[in-house]
Length: 282
Image 1 (cartoon, rainbow, N blue to C red):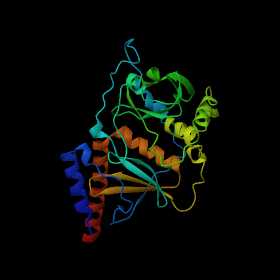
Image 2: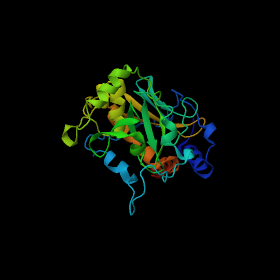
Image 3: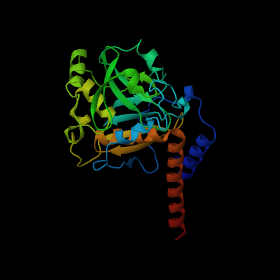
Image 4: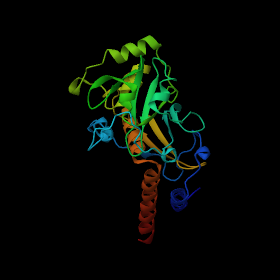
């Protein structure tokens, strides 16, 4: 069994030498930390909508065209992870199970079909999700309002990709997905039932109430697990009471980036090791 110190050493090595992207592991449902078990994740029940923070993408100090690709993006800094509901994997983002390649908005238009989920990404920003509804347009939750925009405008300089297969849920038929999205256009502020763009887009495609605010009661045992892949053989697990909370934590990690998340985990293990040493000395 690994000691906390050995886990800290692993994380320190990960920060010193980044894995090549192809080496990032796929999901291992048994990869729970063996020393102290999964940690309990924070509840975001009183948290504000992180879509308000997504839009640090707004161009400041100039009139540059929104389509201009000016946002940095480093695929090596992506945080790869999986989400479980009890023992079932319901989401996975990893190089071995999904296509993580990103495209310019103009190139992605050649690949999009109505009902597709689109993710816009840039380094140190929350990912922004949208539903492609055809005719070069998307519907998305943007700054506390559901809007119908051209995909190239919604990108605001970010790279993008289709993410239909990341959630391992049965999608609704295309017509219903588009209808779900279009019927929400114009909703804003207190009328909204979703905390961020990802929850909104996923609800449109899958129709699950769990994607809505308050869609699950936060009582009892935490049925959700977020597994962050640290290396080929190691992962770190957090437990949550709702899918809404998992999504918020996952998006926070995406915003921080892989290097910062590894540093955060390393500090956690180092702190636990120090506390154990102090207790042993007493």
